[in-house]
Length: 375
Image: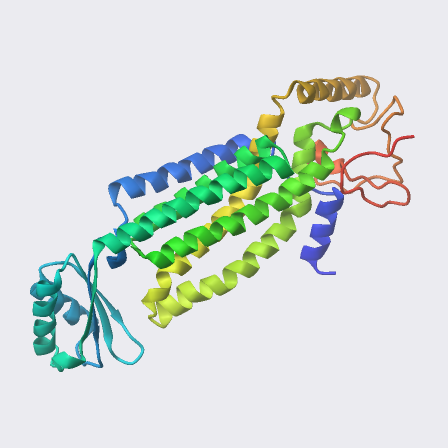
């Protein structure tokens, strides 16, 4: 078995673990800092909206010996507006100029044919009206709103309202970071970007639901035992699905990274940047939020429940009593939720109490749900 596979198995059984929930304040602070930076980027630099949203003209030039820099200068002088020039694979160019009407576009086309030494009839000019972009934007916002509502309803029914709220906050977190990166990097926002943003919501939600499902199973009838608090069970749920989340994210990021860095960077296919950047940033942010944001938020909300508060008091009181008697803090003396222990566990120093939630019982088999066998 590979080292990563062995680590995943030990995390799943609770033999090792990292205290994600215990350090949640640090992750909250880090997320707030990243979110503020993203919002500041949008406010200060703004989004570089594509021609589909602002309107303008797109000129497709056949093969020419003029460089991209020269073509940009020629176009900006002819139109009086900023131009975006992309090199095409056949040696031609795609030039975008915003805020041009039909008469202005015809004049720019004539100037380009003369300065680039290309037959004017071979220059393809397409006009895009700003109303079309506004329609696309409105439909995107409508789709996003409907998606969010459906997500909250589904999670509230399948799990509980606290998980629905946490998932919604995580999704907003992911969207904010992705949009902020677009503003900071200056990449053009196109309909492909919108498609990418809507796509990453599904990936982010998938990772979150996987952890929530493990948490739902592990916290079943949790108030009937006095071994672990809800936060400890939540922490175990994150650890047990950690390797799966990492593997899923890495496998999804590899082809997207190929589009972004190889296709958009080395091969010059700049039109791939709009969707690949949103997917790359969104996938990474989604994996981060499912581990460091969504589940810790659920634990915080759940700890406000009077029953969970009472459970935490009972667990801590039991551990204090066990410590006073010189027993193991995670031991049981009342016999109602004891687990037979076949030997010492291999625990990482400083691991949380939830890390021992999967101690071996009956021949050393782990219990993924984190609940003990009753006698």
